[in-house]
Image (cartoon, rainbow, N blue to C red; front, side):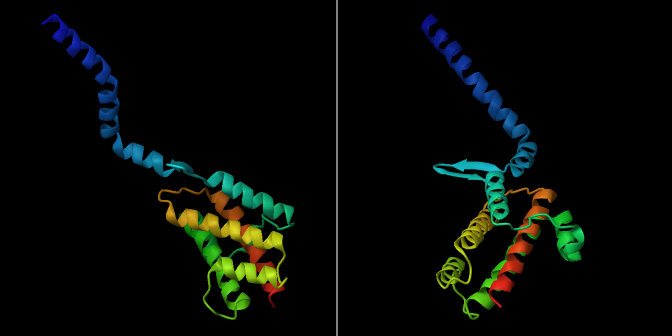
Length: 178
């Protein structure tokens, strides 16, 4: 009988912390959900997403190519600035849409093709150099991560830098594809 009591005491001792943690998570689930929405780095299985690192890589590549990443706010439309204030993720996506529209209308004769194919065709025909092509494709992958990962919380500063990079790339594409 004493062995059974000892077994029960050991079992309770081993289960106490997991039960306390599970109870705390249940009690604070709204707060935990809000915290997780601010996460910019996530790992699921073998897939790891680090948006801060990806954004920094795009900015670094842009600087290496001589692409301006900082513009005065007066360079952007009122709707872009409003989006940055209210929903930075949407500003991010809207600015990518401008690049995509230029690629489709000027880079592929209006034919709907995958962005990667359009960019590689432009690179192959030497309308854009490999550095610009690679940067556009990195931005495209980052855009996809932002669209498909829930709970991404971009800062206004990140959105403004992204708008700057997007504006520079849009201007370069318009110039090169004219």
